[in-house]
Image 1 (cartoon, helix red, strand yellow):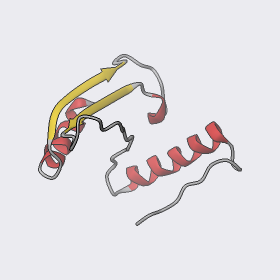
Image 2: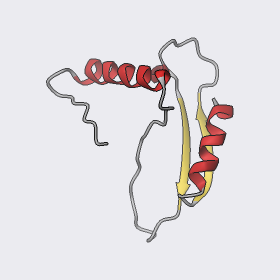
Image 3: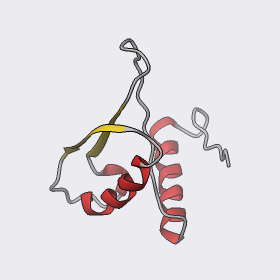
Image 4: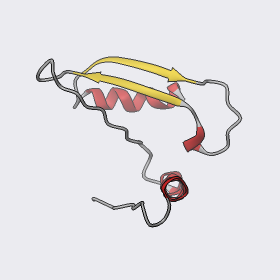
Length: 93
């Protein structure tokens, strides 16, 4: 996973100042769905003030068939996790 993430993170560092990168999680897994893998790449970026408190989860995927598959799998996961009436997938761009 790190080998796939490293080139993307290098590109991201050009537009977002990153002070630290940490790789956390389970590195031995037999899980089949990408949403089930317990790995986090935590990026620390500069804060404007010392009192800032926020975090953001996002997924980066390539714009190809695999990216479409990941979107569909993520939509299924959201619906299973929260239910069809309590969840939504909204395209912003």
